[in-house]
Amino acid sequence: MVMKTAVGNSKPTTGTAQKTLGQYLFDCLKLEGITEIFGVAGDYNFTLLDALEQYNGVNFISGRNELNSGYAADGYARIKGLSALITTFGVGELSACNAIAGANSEHVPLIHIVGAPPEKDQQAHKLMHHTLMNGDFDIFHKVYELIAAYTAKLTPENAEIEIPAAIRIAKEKKKPVYLVVADDLVSKPVIARQEPAPPRPASNLKTLHAATEHVRQLLERAHRPVILVDVKTIRFGLETAVRRLADTMNVPVATMMFGKGAFDETHPHYTGMYQGSFGSSEVQTTVENADCILSIGLVLADNNTANFTAKLNPLVTVDIQPDKVKVAEAEYANVFAADMLLSLQNVGYKGQGLAGKPTFPYDQITGSTDEHLTAAIYYPRFQQMLKEGDIVIAETGTFYNGIAQVRLPRNVTYIAQGGWESIGYATPSAFGASIAAPDRRVLLFTGDGSLQLTAQEISSMLYYECKPIIFILNNDGYTIEKYLNVKQENQQYNKIPRWSYTKLAEAFGGDAFTVTVRTYGELDQAIIQAEKERAERLCIIEMIAANPMDAPENMRRMRKYLEMQEKQQSQN
Image 1 (cartoon, rainbow, N blue to C red):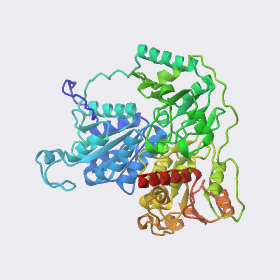
Image 2: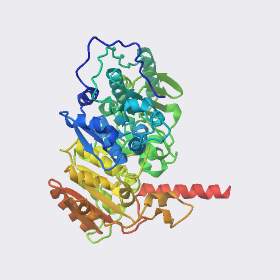
Image 3: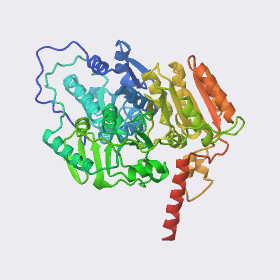
C-alpha cells in the first residue's frame, strides 16, 4: 500500500523560511548520515544538482547509467543504513525501476529523488520531452506507487512535512521511497510548517507478554532447540540482540542463505547454513530435528528454502518478524522483534550448546600448484584470504551459491541480492559500498555473464579512486542458467561474447593491477600480489574455469533435485 501524508491541516507559520526546497532536502539527508548521493544528470534535475554542487557536506556521485546508480545506492545503504538517488523524469526514473524494485524486495531503505518538468508546463499539459507525449505527468509517479513504500510530489508548501515523512517511512519499513519535484520549485524557499512527529511504534506489552509465555511453554518441553537467523535480522539491525540471545540460551545457531552474515560465523554456537536438501546434512539434521525453532526475520522464498525442500515444523516454530510474532499457529500482532528478543533473554532457558564441533566445506586448502581451477580449489583459498572488517559482495549465480558456503571472519559485511536476484547487481553495488566505506577492503566476486550487464561501473570505480579486489569467474557464459534449465543442454541463449576482462581498466582510462589465472598456484600468487597492490589501485583477477560446468556442491545438489522433478513431471 502506498502511504500518504495529510498536509491540509498543517498551518504555515508567519513569514517564509530562508532555506530553499533543495537546501532543506539536502539538510534532511545530511542529518541521516548521507554524505554522497548517487545518480545521473538530466535536464530536469539540473536545478537539484546545481543546488547540490553549492551544498557543503554531501557530494554527488555520478554513475554511468541510472540502473547502475540505483544498484550503487542499494550497496551504499546496506553499509550506512540509508542512501539517496537522483534521476531525471521519465527516461531516468524508469531506467532505475529495476534497482528500486530490488531494494523493495530486499528491504533496503533508499530515497529516490526525481527532477520533473517545470510546474507551469505540467499544469498546462504541454507535450514535453521524456514523456509519453500525451500531457500526462502522473504516469511514472503511478509506477512508483507500486514499487515504493511512499511517494510524494514536493512543493515549497509541503516539503517540511513530506521529506521527513518519507525518510521516516524508509527507515521504519526498510524500503525505498520516491520524491518528485518540479525543477522550477527546487530553488524556491520552503514554507515553514509545524506538524507533530508521529509517535514511534511500540510493542503492545500485553501481547508481548503473552507471546513470551507461549514461547516459554515450548522451551520447557524442548531438548533440542535451535536459533535460525535470516535476512531481516540484518536489515532491521537485530544482529546484536540475536547474538545476546544465543549467548544466553546456549543453543545452536544456523543461518538461512538470504541471511548469510547476520550471525558471527566464528561464534562457538554457529553450526552453519541451512539450505534444506541442497546444503549440509549436519545442519539439516540439527534444524529439522529441533523441537523448538526460534527463527528471526525468516523469508520462506523458493531460493531461500532450496526449492522449498527446507522443512520447518510449524508446530514448534517461533517466527519472529520485525513487527509481529507467530508461535506455532498463534499470531501476536504489534510485537516488535527487538522487544521479543530481549524478553526471551529473560525466559531462563539454558541449552547444551553444540553437540560436537561443526565442519565447514572449505576449511581445508586442496589442490596442487599446477592444478586447474575448480570450485573445490578456489573457495577454500577465498575463505583463507578474508579478514575481519571486509566487505564481501557476491553476484547472483555461481558465486552466490559458492560464497554462501565460505565461512566469514568476524565483522564482515556480506552483500548479495538473494531474493530479487538481478544479474549485474554486484558490480555497481560494490562501487556503492566502496564509496560508503573507503577505509574498508571491498572484495567483489562476479561472473563473466553478470559483469557484462554492468561493467561500466568499473569506470566509475576508477574515476572515484575506489580500490576493490574484483574476482571474475570466466566460465564461458551463464552457468547458473545452464544448471537451472534441465530440459535442454547447450542453449545458445546462455552463451556470451568473449571479453578481454583484464583490459577493461585500460579501456576505461584507468590504472589497475590485472591478471588472468588458470591454476591454483597462479591464483595464490595473484591474491598475494593483489593484497599488496590494493592500497594503491583497483585489482582485477580473471579466473578461467577448467570446466565451464564446474560448480559448488550445493549447486550440483540443486541440479539433481531439478532433474528428479523434471523426470517425475514427464512421467505423469
